[in-house]
Length: 288
Image (cartoon, rainbow, N blue to C red; front, top):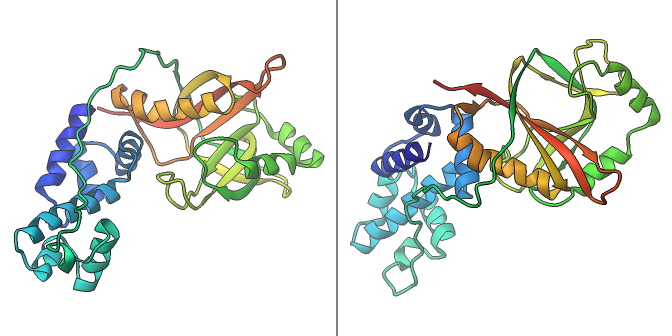
């Protein structure tokens, strides 16, 4: 996958002045658009769209320094109007295109190169499970996107669950893992930025179609799941596991993500404060 990523970076470089779409890039990489965008973000720390925009504006800076006209540069890099290019260039560089030759410090976005980094050799334990279609039934609300630490709005959601809702969930639970699970979906930034909000659900897995009105639902189609158990300080170990799934496991496994929510569950240790056993369930499909 690292070779594929670097091959894609070269492909982007060759087409910066073309009408390059994210779907074209994913097809060139040989994976789904959803999988490639998420993998790119977790490995690079920026979205694929932002990277392409910044590389185009960085290249535009060089063209302007070499005497190209602003209108020509704007057209070359896909801007429909001079105003649109000027706004984007100022947001990127902090100056107007016309100010570039006045001795200001120039900002650039270097071309990315992905490398394999061996850091400790900690193995990732996982298993593959097949599941039929199921529903998570529980309680849900919109909460702020938060990559690290305890999300207090999710804590409030958990505390809001009534005894009647608990009984209803317990009566519906008929699939493994027979745990209270957490699922996040419908993120404003598609989980690629720590901004906006997402829908978070706390509930149970069920095949029952008769769901009481006091519960909300989200339905999952039949698919393959990669399951990652982890044990340690909560929530850091769980969040580190999620990051490693994208940064390490997906780059070397014969699986790719599908566009569906993942979910997890956590069991707190009775004798260790803020320690927990968790599992992260990620929907995938085998490649090749």
